[in-house]
Length: 540
Ligand code: AMP
Image (tube, rainbow, N blue to C red; front, top):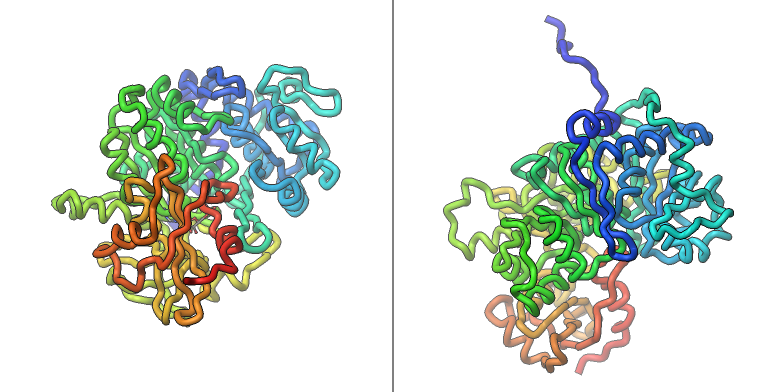
């Protein structure tokens, strides 16, 4: 027999997802919060039609296969239309991060050679700050506020009117580029990651699996994670694939607006970085009876480690946290932290210990931990090593091949820059970013473990632990904390609270209180700024 199968060679492209919207889910709603806080309602039939019009208009206006179309937008219906309309005409959707500095946005738009920009009207003041440093053939403005669009730009609605809803899809190879995101670049210049149709489709199918995030047409999905942060962790595409309703928060990411949206749309799954949930925890604790959310609501938390105290607090609100670990480079989901069936008999405390880990690698994502020489380390739950990944939605290079030698191994694995342990069950536990570890007297101390434990203190709102140079120990941990309600917390209070949880040499030698931990453009603790701030620290 020939080794060839009899199966069709059918491309995995986003075109198929867009067609399904019309055929199977036309009436499913897409709700978006507008700048004035009103809720805009549309449905998947409309999204389908408008995405095709956008694809057609881009083609008519000369955008070619492989050209980058940039967006500078919040999470709402028009961004979803671009998510679909750009790739189905062969374009590459490049989501610009609106929280970056104007200089960085210009650098990234130029580096990607973006041809067209689609921008929210409320973000035009930001565009004004970098417009002289970039060139787009056309700037298309989405009139979210309803105010007239200035003549120097194209009104998005007029642009769609140019397009034809019977747009004929061009032939697309499943390995063609569909989207692009830049890494947040806390060290060095941001680097471009280019997703293919195939990687996006496979990531969506895997994300929908019951044993990962279990997203189905019965869900109402709210990505709080911005659509410019690693494709909103794939949630927009996965929701389209399965026909799940989407409730998009627009520019309003404060706890009250989000809780109102969860209640009014009975959201069943939401996702974002830990800082979002810390704010929601505070709001819910302040007014325990104010909101009614859908029963068993799931919240996907990732982007930074999730303190155990957050799992416990949200269990009490009937909002279940599911931890996920990933990167812009990894599609982005690499692991999901669910408790396996074989562990379902473990007690409540052991379940928390399991959920606080980053979880099991998704199907087709291969993971290994290696030492400094690149030799594989055992999965014994104790040995820490550099985590490396490979798989169909893991990038194998950066756009224009930048940084390749540092980030990929000779045998083609991605070096994540995260330090992890893996136990015999396969659970990955992230101990730190390589650059955030504290090296004290030859021993590595995990800043993440300390932070998570400190954030379990009832009077602590946020905590970040950084390494500070020490004359005797090389480095020692300094804990920088934000306290609740102007409470006073001393170094001794924190050390006493941590005693018993850690070896003595792990305990921070000093605690500094500040008003707010600086955050990155994607809402994570910006430890690089803290390290800079405390670089002249003198130990008593
Ligand atoms: P980004 O590309 O901005 O999404 O950042 C990716 C990095 O965020 C990873 O390399 C991790 O250091 C961190 N990260 C993502 N998810 C988690 C998680 N669940 N726990 C701890 N760190 C995380």
